[in-house]
Length: 139
Image: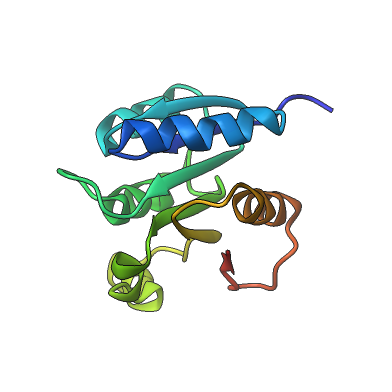
């Protein structure tokens, strides 16, 4: 089996390094960005197998990046996992976001602080397709 590729986007460099280490330890090749624009460019340069992105970032947010990627024919089918703190998560109704931007919901969701086992459970579940239609995997 070939190596899986991930892109991790978060405005906190320590967190991108932490998530990257978890993924690399589990056999992924990882590219990182610390803002939405740089992350989008990484994804457009070489489509990954999965994207993990922070919901709240300065400038363009993860919500807007998710919407852009979901509408782009070249990136719309890439599995995307939102990584964020619980306070931000409680203020986001993904059904409303999906309707407003006319896009799908994210494939997974992981809350900060990141637990390596929970993170990998969601990543593996998303990549294996172990979820019902429309279900968002959470950890």
